[in-house]
Image (cartoon, rainbow, N blue to C red):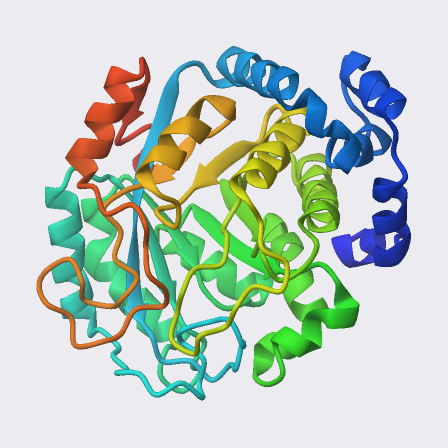
Length: 370
């Protein structure tokens, strides 16, 4: 059974109503549970849980240290292209935006990779817009041939593909894939994705199941916080992660918490997510998903990133550029969105050490898998 079949058993409005009606007693029962259930999760993301935030944070910290120790994996994103045929209303790469478009050649991508490697990174995430005529599977394979020997682990955050295509990329050295559903509300999904292949809700939702079938070592997922009610979004995000952990148990699952950032097009969040809300969501999901990796990007300010770290974060990007060609020199392409943490990777690593954590640049090598 794929996740689309699972999510059809729920109704967005009913979940929202159930969350809103939770009481203090419901939250206390959820916190008393040794392994919180989906029903407990409804309580933990509810308004009634706000007075328990400190207790939730302490438990989330203890649980993370028990399962992951005091280590944080560092990675860098490499944007290959900002060309895109989709018209996502919130995205800087929207095909309707007048921005400077750029697609790196495989040789230019290799140059970016060398610049990133020089910063210390051995884990790399490759990203691109969805432009079938420009950014093809063969193009990615040529890029991989140029850079795969320089990195211990390669991940992709690309457009949805068929299982056979994912297997080809795995054969070319990719061990992880990430894909954000953006919003799990099928009713409003089309408002945010009015044109392009991304407008197909089901095709996108079933992508992580195809990735699991293909055999990726790591699968990442997330919802774009600000598009919809974060409490309901968080419930469905956790439901999705739980499904992947149970069905595709050979793959490690990582959850991201991206909040909307200023980008070309000027889209304003319909449901702004405060820092306190973000803390509650992170803690609630850590209690429900004790074995999932939690990823935090440079979308957030340095002080907030440092504060969120003890609550469950296990993976962090650093020194990020969201425009193609931004590491090796001045890029001629525009960025997807503005980052908030512009500290160097070395500065982020030093902060981690001062906080009692070990920054890890390499924790796995593709050579181990043959």
